[in-house]
Length: 48
Image 1 (cartoon, helix red, strand yellow):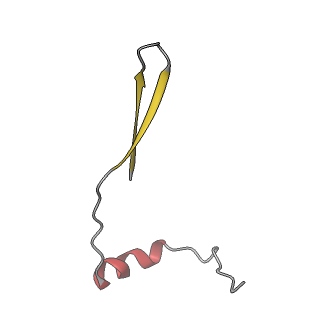
Image 2: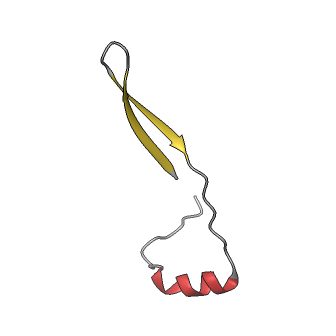
């Protein structure tokens, strides 16, 4: 995930900084089975 912050430089200009945050999403067969109903059939992958 990404976090952003806004700071002012010494000359008064705005500076935007981005930082990658640690995250952990454990996947198990049970977790995947619970998420299957939330998937849509709209997305299709082509072999091109």
